[in-house]
Image (cartoon, rainbow, N blue to C red; front, top):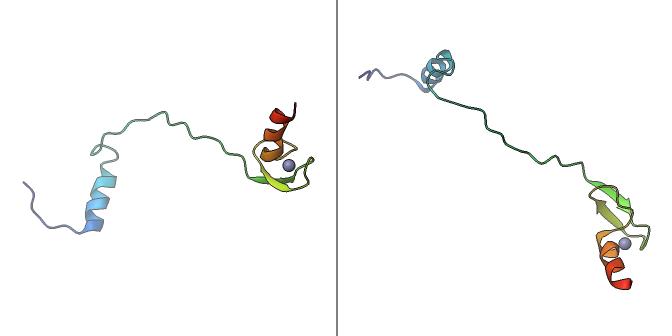
Length: 70
Ligand SMILES: [Zn+2]
């Protein structure tokens, strides 16, 4: 067992030199939801500003209302 004291930086350098041999690793299929940048739009129904998720022209509140109005 190697008990020589080495500094943290030396240890990191050793690990880096191993070039992946020390740690096993693998690719994982991680799906990162692509979030479009937040856009502020003016609701064409109520005139209030709201955060657009996609390209809606009315705010969520008005969008909800239409389900009740008809
Ligand atoms: Zn609205």
